[in-house]
Amino acid sequence: MTDPAGTQADPIRTETVGADTMMAAVTVTAPRPVVFSAFTDPDVLAQWFWPQRFGTQFVSDLRPGGEFKIIAAGLPEGQDMGVSGVYQDVEAPARVTMSWQWNGETPVTHVSIELTEAAPDRTEVSVTHTANPTVTDRDDHVVGWRDCLTRLVQKYGTTSR
Image 1 (cartoon, helix red, strand yellow):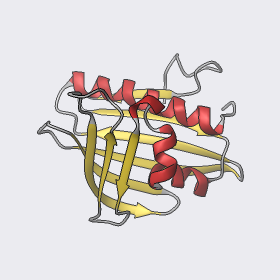
Image 2 (cartoon, rainbow, N blue to C red):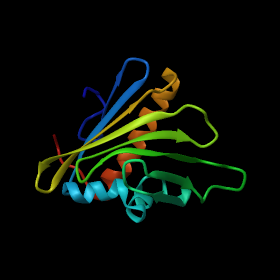
Image 3 (cartoon, rainbow, N blue to C red):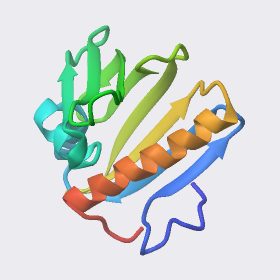
Image 4 (cartoon, rainbow, N blue to C red):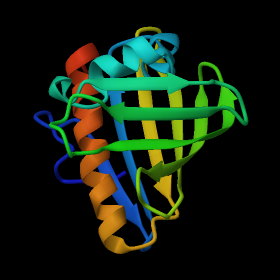
């Protein structure tokens, strides 16, 4: 991944591929099973995925064909933010793939989260978000995943590459 912003101050590396794909990666200071839980355990994901003020709720049936929902329950009345999808592949503690659909929107995109052991206490997290219908959607997902991974780093820490 190449990104001039992926520096000591910002360890998250991002890249776009074509008009419909974005990738983001970071190394966190936690063992792979802990990081897998951060993406799949409702209680853990709700602690970091979106800002705390969003009141994140996560419902998950973690199996191929199982559904998930991430809901921002703490937003002011009249505001709605959530995403849902279906797990396509679940390989603990290495990989999760899923469909991804924002509440109230028609497009269905796809997310792959790959976790690679960099050392016994370090995990390389790679997120690939594909099938974005527009460059704007792709770029919005770059911003969104960067924000999410920044909170993951705040939770677990990071190390230099």
